[in-house]
Length: 620
View: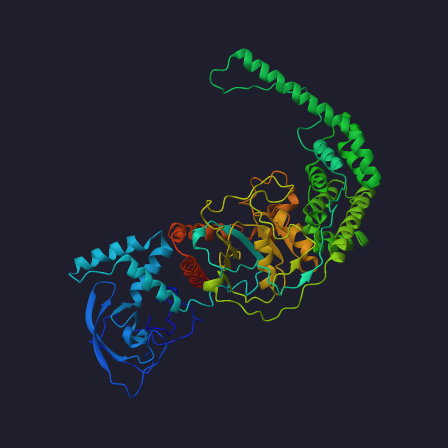
């Protein structure tokens, strides 16, 4: 376009920190003649000449209500070839207009009106142009332009509009402690993919190589059969019972009473066999736990042993939760991350009330200590429990030491030359300060994670886009629903998207990463960069908790919020609120090329953030 100077954001989305580029025009009525100012130029980039004569051309100006026929001053551009007949023309931004080609101009308010429409509700270009065309007919104006012409002009306008400095929450600062990540099904056709797309997951030739390798046996209990047997005993119906209740297979239309009786009998037999198997496993599990840690075996025997069953002593829920987490198919660092490990060590060395209060980051341990304090104040910390806690710390220290021994510290931040975000599809409020390292000893490092998220989790990745579409975008949000950036995913969402975005942009890892599949993300990050992520907690938000049937309570934020009221105030649905808004442009983006899809997404998210920031400042 002829216009090239940056344009102010819409007045209804302006922020106090926006640069005052020029006085915002009060009138949207075009002048009789657009004068050729000193900021005039040609679309090729050539500036005006003080010696070249000025020519006046007829032009059409499109506003919100009607089209105007007026004139514009131009100069012949001698930098362009004679056959092109291009002209140097005025920028016109100070008057509130976009000069497309010296023949066609649009008012800024017209473009802002479409931006307001598509960011408020699903509004394709064609539908909005149809509305404006009818308005023009009502006003007795010349016809409005076609949808294709307006679409091209709007993207020219979007490239110039200064929607910057709005990817940071005023309350959370440039690097939020609680980073909420979520993939969004906002995709365009794979046929439109260009080689310029460069997500943070890209490994460049000049990227550093790290010798991190897989660390096996990270569980608290190394033996998989013992973990399975322990879960089998502590889960399920109470072993203090009552005869097996008869099941009824009802509600199946057309089923005869004899068939119902047979199914009920089969269910009763299966339940009885399971009950017997659980009871049979109790002494075996006790002995094997005792060999690991005598206190752990005693704790199990006291609350789940045969003597407790004979005495009809039902185990309290806090013990069941503890053993479920100990037997989880997860790294020991999921239950006891490094910051919590430090607090647990302090408590084991000095079992004071002050140190006990610091164990809120370990809900399973904190709840047991609280239970003992309430039920047996004369002996709040029994020897078997103390022995178990010491064993837990030893086990977690061993896992962490093996992790950090295989990985060097991450490189210091540096200035990274980035491609324009319109080309790379990577737009974050923080500049890139590192290249994603190459991990040659991790053979699955760059493998696309298209289906199941982790080997031990029961939940699968959603189908982000159909076969013909890209993988959508990965967004990061703060707890106030402010988006801190996004990047386009060429194929499918995976843990690598979150890991790489943090590694390349964050000077220091977030205190808490909330992600749909944090249960798999935590080990992924700790395997590669344990020094960088050692103080980060990975948890699943409430919205995405369903489907994680094999994950222990240590993987869910709600487990921590139940003991720490401060965490209950974290708005974990912030990302879903933002994703719900982004769904308004899903259909429009699916028909766009790569660059337009990226720009359209950036404009939407920028306006979304600005509206929320303005609303928060108004309410506060």
